[in-house]
Amino acid sequence: MAGIDWSGVREQLAALAARGADEVFGANGHGWALEPPLTAAELAEAETQLGVELPEEYRSFLLQVSAARHAA
View 1 (tube, rainbow, N blue to C red):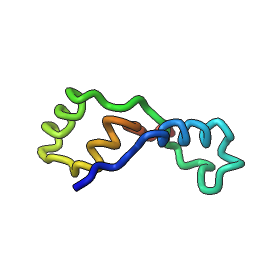
View 2 (view 1 turned 180 degrees about the vertical axis):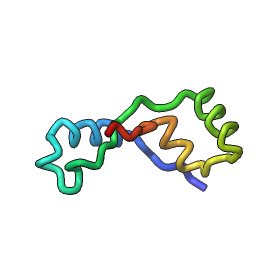
View 3 (view 1 turned 60 degrees about the horizontal axis):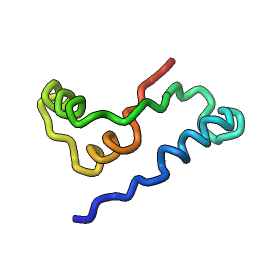
View 4 (view 1 turned 120 degrees about the vertical axis):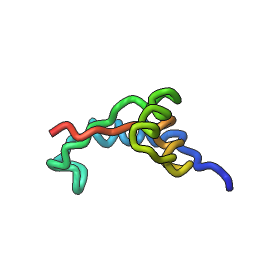
């Protein structure tokens, strides 16, 4: 299976965040913040703590784009 090309996604999300919640439909009050991508060690630790191996597509998102968190 071919991997997903996440190039540019982090930048697009940051640009949307910079516009403000009032300008982006559905962004007002959701409370999610863009965090740095996980390191391979952080991802391995999360999978160990959860007792699962995450799907490859989600793993690549976490490693290349962001591990978002709820900020509210």
